[in-house]
Image (spheres, rainbow, N blue to C red):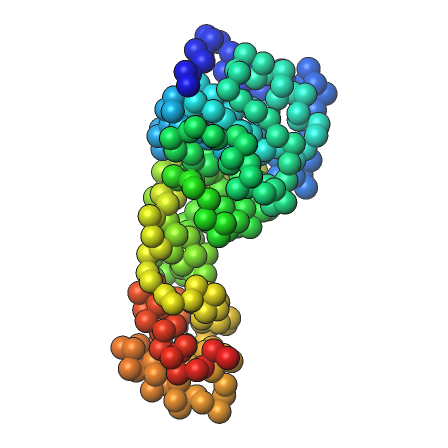
Length: 299
């Protein structure tokens, strides 16, 4: 695979070029699709650098918009597949990316797409594949979880998301940002905040700031558990009501008539019953899950 050469002066990610493309095609933004187009070259540089692409590697983009990031991915990766849900953007993308023969625009909703099949169709022969995208804020978490839970052969996920969501993904135990999303992401990946992105970097400007985060896929989950479904069931139950103690939240799983037994089990795991879910590490959740399963408290 060889990378196409960039042509001087053609970058999409500038305010002037973006406005020209929008005018030329008579495009109007749909708030329901979370459409905000990036017009900051420096941010694109950081995204592409974090993705660590190359001629033998592939990139899956979700929500390419008018192709600002797609264009840069096409210059760096051997193969690019871009999933776009809005049919109005397809002719625009084909127009602005006409010079790149290593890009395939796919009209699809990522949440309804068979991603394993897409991998086979789009990235055959690629050494490694990463997801690189500016994700629509309203579906960020479902998309991230689909990418992780389907255990795709991906190297990393480098995405721009709402800053608050990025901070939750990377949060450590003990803080208010730490929760079920933190644990789910960190179970599968090593998160790294790449940079913050002000709202002025987009047309139109969103109402919130954004951040780029890199999720490096772990070769194996962060902790070993005998049953992942039970692990995440315990995690979700522990955060059911954040102000409640672990003992009170987990009583819904174990049964209120076994509350004293549950308190003893928590103590045997080295976990004080009065602690809250946000204070436990992944290792503690794994240990607790195994103990609850062993005691028959997750029926």
